[in-house]
Image (cartoon, rainbow, N blue to C red; front, top):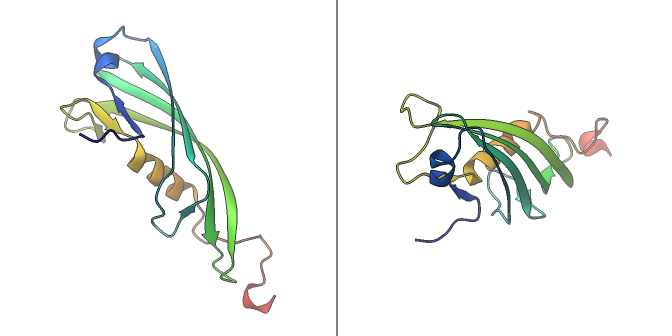
Length: 133
């Protein structure tokens, strides 16, 4: 099986000491999707804790992306530096469910968090005059 650069095997954490903190740093390039072009590698720093068969993952995502201004259509770069938190459970009713193999792929989570951090109207600058510039 191909090892994914943003995946973590949670089995060791689940079988480990409750309350123990595990630190991870994941890094890699993401392909451009969802109208976002990734300019630099995405760096994800994670603090993961086993809370009695529940995994609490707090993280920081940092990267540089290229966006297109909604008004003028010009491309511009934006630095992304954001925090997120996810709770993974073995319970099938949970939002983030641990798979039977114990592997969590953070790539879709990272993509989702970046998209959710963007404003509805993406502007290159607050006072962009659009095509009139």
